[in-house]
Length: 131
Image 1 (cartoon, rainbow, N blue to C red):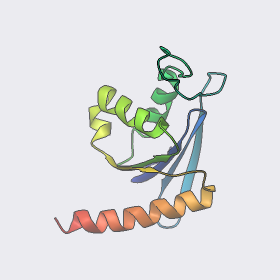
Image 2: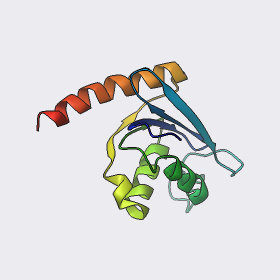
Image 3: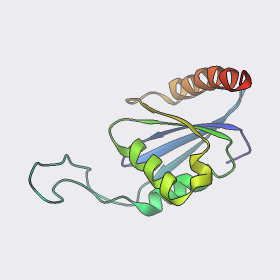
């Protein structure tokens, strides 16, 4: 990924879409998990039922895509975005400091995702400049 300052990540348990962007361009990168099967729902009172373990290789490859980014917005449906955030907190605290927010987001188009990232960071950058 090039040296864009801002990035938005949309992640589920199968893939992560990482867009480094500025006001006029965006660079996409898709990282896919190597695990097969579906991520199931947790079943009450059944140890480990329906829950895949964290795919460390997948998360490490997503983190590698973000290594040069200055500010990150993590998005996605369900729990994958929070699992990634917790994994980054634990394994790359210097990267964790660059996460501006974590937001729930269903399945936007790439264009919608980039527009959301630009809108978010336009406000976020303005708020940080006032401090």
